[in-house]
Image 1 (cartoon, helix red, strand yellow):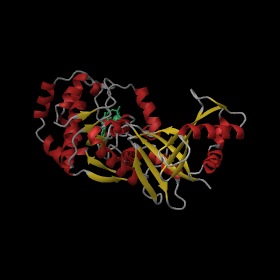
Image 2 (cartoon, helix red, strand yellow):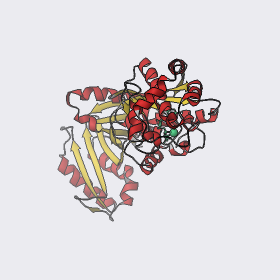
Image 3 (cartoon, protein in one colour):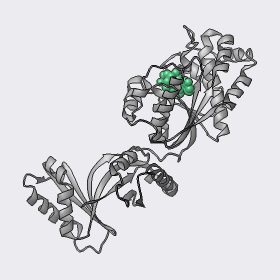
Image 4 (cartoon, helix red, strand yellow):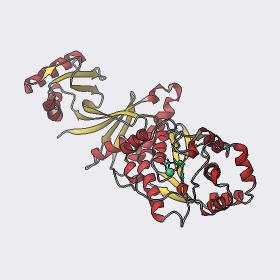
Length: 398
Ligand code: ATP
Ligand code: MG
């Protein structure tokens, strides 16, 4: 019976010098939180590697690996079989554990690392002898030390001998929370879940805000947004979705704003409300899925007008991506199929046929001055935002 553990390798955070401890502590907290519910496990961090050792019967290692593959800060994952620090036991374990891999490939090499110097064989000898053993068992194999199809890795550690299985890519980036906290403007579209993923990958802890305008937008549109938030929570962890009752400010804008700058005025209004909610929760930036020139409200002039509406930095990770690139990420992270469900967003109602692509700030400010009731409506909307808890695992799996 093979005793299997999970290994996860830290990425960029290992370059963080004196701050490294802070990054590692944050990563450890995230891993513990995301593996919750799977059973008891031992957790150790050593030499840029995290060791997860199942301790309860029925611990689901596949699910643990799937969850780890979505944790930012980890660049690679692999499993390992743990056996006694005895050469015969190591050979037998290698044979059993790596059998499917060894059958699949034609060339291999053995790498050995001996952290426990009390082990009687030195690394080159382990490589040579284990290599010879595997060649005897699998005569079709050849050793290729330069470009092997399979690298058999043995580590002799304090707690036992570890035989590594094949590696897979981790999520990369930095542990969520190490770069601060922000509020993501989540529509039901393709871009904003991708924006959330990208900023979380740079270490931002995120909550979401969504503007709903019932009865113009339906309960189903809102449910879709809740689903998207749950899907993204596989990466961000548990968070809160603020749902803003936006009908009153939006109707007021419809009735009072000049048609050709309506959208920019609405974007400014949304950002002001988002900033108020962010401040209330101690969040330091806003995130949107805007992409340069995708629509009239995302031209340089329009973005400039939007930016001056409030003081928090607006992060737009999709700004230089074209739609196909954004879609590729959406597919990879599993949000695409939900995003393309056809439910209306409040950004698509009351929109004029011919929006200005080069709005001028002076004109925008004049229009706002002529809408004296807007600030109170926005304040009420921010105040009335409903807090919807988003729990990891609420989402149907991609
Ligand atoms: P997406 O694909 O994410 O919907 P989009 O291409 O539809 O983006 P817009 O509708 O112009 O673009 O919206 C630009 C950005 O504004 C979105 O990416 C999102 O961050 C934010 N946004 C738009 N509508 C809403 C909404 N109803 N609630 C919250 N944020 C929104
Ligand atoms: Mg949209």
